[in-house]
Amino acid sequence: MPKQTFKYEICELSKETVPLYCVCLEDWSDEMKEAGNHKALWYEKMKDKGLRVKLAKNNKGEIGGMIQYFPAEYAGVNAPGMLFIQCIWVHGYKKGRGNFQKKGMGTALIKAAEEDAKSLGADGLIAWGLALPFWMKASWYKKRGFKIADKQDMMILLWKQFKENAQEPKLIRKQKDPLNNIQKDKVIISAFINGVCPVGGLNYEKSKKAALSFKEKVEFREINTYEPEVIKEWGITDAVYINNNLITAGPPLSYEKILKLIKKEVKKLPG
Image 1 (cartoon, rainbow, N blue to C red):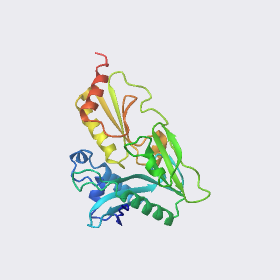
Image 2: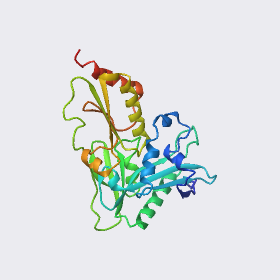
Image 3: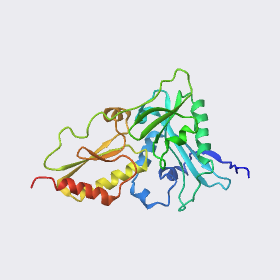
Image 4: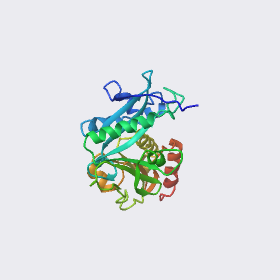
């Protein structure tokens, strides 16, 4: 039996679809509401600075996928003249709009992004993935012609070169710890927030809420990493540290887990 093919309409973001984009197509999710308005604020700042967003619709006009990319200086990579794919997401839950995955929608989106990036004169297109087989898979990009440019732990930076003289992109490494000197009289929560991904907003909001429950024993510090200079200064975009210990820079932890980690450090305080 021949493999079934699907055709999709790739469209630009509109005023009507911005709210859906800001919750990554998960308008049904209570957890997305917990992530606050960080994504919307980031979008307002980035919409005139080279941000590109494309949505994919099926033949019924239902939006099932999205891709967002923007100038690499606003990401944690060193890649002048290139565009960075922050994420490509095809809705895969039964809830809400349903499962659109494994039907070629992601491939259609990335092809559209490549054509767009070339038309804009970009030196190349960059993406990031993980060496894990189940979430943000780097292997997905490799199957579509992207080559590995850099690695750090489980993170893999990939790229597709458009111009012969394009320089291979590199990840910006962590430059310094959140604290130069750990205060002995309180626990310090350092929350790095960029806004590009609701997951980062979710980790931020949960950590802030947890920190407030300990009152004067815990100090919550926000480091906004929207500006490229701040990203270069720290080498961090979205992450939460308890004192100098990284607790999350990826999928969100539960509020209960964060609370437990803070409580463990509070118990170490004198008195």
